[in-house]
Image 1 (tube, rainbow over the protein chains, first blue to last red):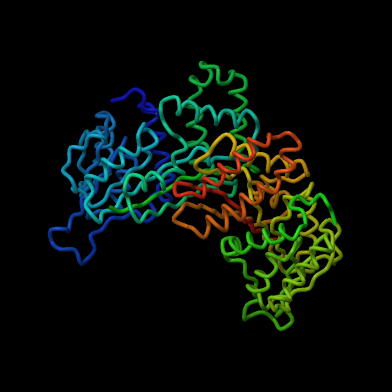
Image 2: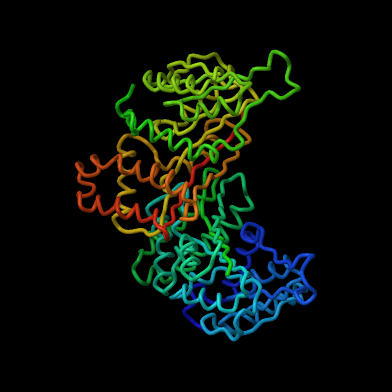
Length: 276
Length: 276
């Protein structure tokens, strides 16, 4: 387990990740459904799906639900995350997931083991995403597919914007970059998939546009996902001198103005699919 | 005719605006179709549509095509633009458009004259868009709708990005702001429509995501729309000292890298609809 993981491992943080997953699940998982189809031979009835980097299981339960006929193997580098993910999957009554602690760069699977691979909010944390994708490609069957989902913090803008609210957002980016992450990796999914050998690549942006006509998203996305994430780097931002405490507090207050009647918030994720 | 119009009035510029309109037309005009429907009373057979700020007619011909049963009144502040728009509409064989020189802030129409109003790439040029929208609302019938389309230059990002390419893009924004424009107005459509009295407002982002799997968009959008637009402010950017000529040339060269095999480009427009 790496202490450097940008989102930390606290219970509060796990709850935020679950809230985020619920709010965004429909958007991100739209179309992600793995099924062998009626014409599949008997021994192909259960597709083997690898979820690489399952974290606390936020996406796992969606995968388990949307692909009930698939056998899902979910791996993560953190034993603690796997425990939480396992417990979440059990609470939700799914029996089609197996968990295993494993490193994406050193996968304990034979070549061409999986029919599909699902990687969500993982590549942003890796220092060498191409090597990771090549490693994943090794264990993918010929003709199998990979699905990659990532955010892009450079896609984010809002109304009203102030110097301090923009700066607070930039602190989040800087803190994540300081941990070796790439919070702007979303835009790179196409070249990353291409340069790691995948074919038939299709990348589509998944848009979150929020104005006050959508109170659920104001609550679930602006407040509980975005602003909560920015607030999570307060200590680092202030103690490292990126912002003084007064500007920080004003920045957070200004971010909350985007949740008011005139407020607007825009962010986009990217979802890429490729085949081997 | 105002010489301050940010896009200028040269033939080359008119061609760029038409190229842009063709590339983006399907995206922006999707769903914009005005029809009285089969149950409309006889005297309602011809809907009256106001296109406010028709420019050289790039959107007019799309409107004329998609709403053949409507009577379209297209106005613009520039007599020259109207001439070009008229000629374009005639070349394309449409007879359902009437042109009139008029100022949005001082409309020569009675209250509640129009069934629908269409405003595309216009509000960004106005110093007081709320007053303009209120003026338009006056001539809209009760129950009628307004459609507003605008870009947002703050939504734009690309890969690869360099200091110089980002700076060149910022020069475009700065030049437009210097002329009193608001190139980031797209995100404000919701509050603008709300604060000028419209109801049932629905705003949706219209996304342009381009990677090298889409060569038509690389050509029509990245090169002919975006980079051409940036190149249009070269003289202002360099003569005003925003960038020196070497950095400028590097910035443009780097923007062209977004059109290469690993390049990615993202921009979004906003389309808002409201009723009276």
